[in-house]
Image (tube, rainbow, N blue to C red; front, side, top):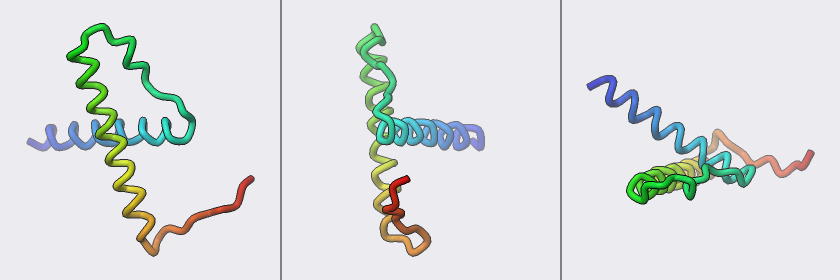
Length: 74
């Protein structure tokens, strides 16, 4: 049971990091290169879940007193 929870958390973390990379750089996995439509559909759903987790995390952090926006451009 502990391994399942660990692997689930890792999978969520990976898809959320991929969402952050896509948001900050525009780079994303080329799911169109996946030949199997069933696997491509599953991967797209997995990546969309990461987008949702990323959005929820940002929304939560926007209301947290522990985080502030840095509007300074370097």
